[in-house]
Length: 106
View 1 (cartoon, rainbow, N blue to C red):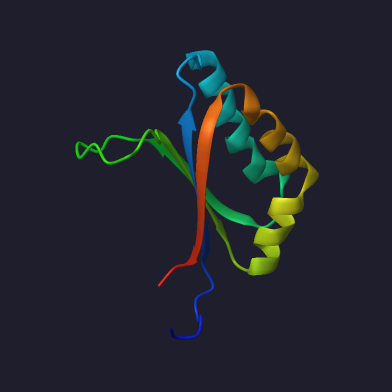
View 2 (cartoon, helix red, strand yellow):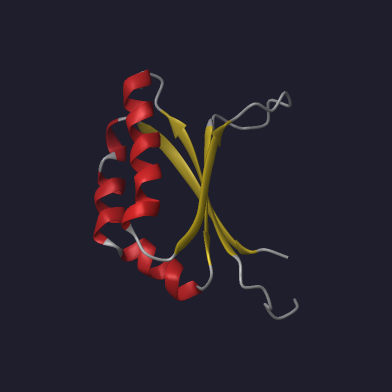
């Protein structure tokens, strides 16, 4: 494996919602996630979208959120930030499962 020389750290989060999750609950989560970029320092970009792949390989994951950081330190501040932790605490009511992958963009 080659040493990391990138300055772009991606944090990708996938959500699969419970069968009974309402549109209002899902919209509140999307909105809440979007607010994090304005409340937590170090997030350089944020984007999200819902699955539109025709392949049928999403295994129930319907929403993808991507945050970009310039350093591991910035990402770590985000992960431990009280605002992020409070957001995570709101997910239990309607989130079935999540998947998170971080990588250095090549």
